Image (cartoon, rainbow, N blue to C red; front, side, top):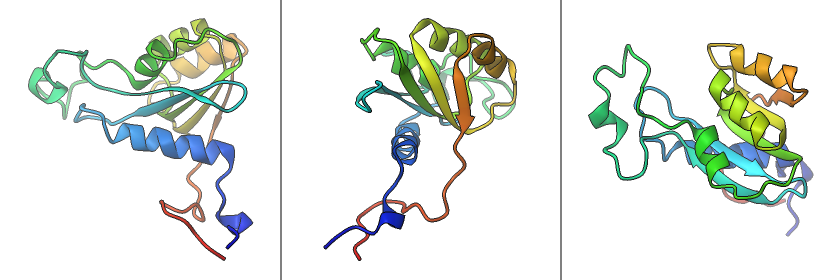
Length: 155
């Protein structure tokens, strides 16, 4: 049976769905963020999510008041994905569920990423200013109502 064209995710929707799945691994109670680094051919180089450094207790143990204060122990999803990408080839795309903060945008610029696709805005536009200053393309991918949550759709 053939898959209906309307049910097939676009490349951007596909990678954003993977970023959203990665976010479900986050250990930060304040905000769960996932990221995927993809090369220019559309191959996944790495994924990442926010949480405390390897070997440290989870954020829920380290953070005193996650409801009111930003976590100071969590490594951001973008940084984790970039650290594990191991590929310095240019023209990578980063898919991230939330727009980058300023520090993450600086790391994105330094890692050879040429395009960032975001699920939702970050509270501080400083990261977008860094991307724009470096000529790094960035756009939002709003949730698609007709995109399936998972599984196959048959005609």
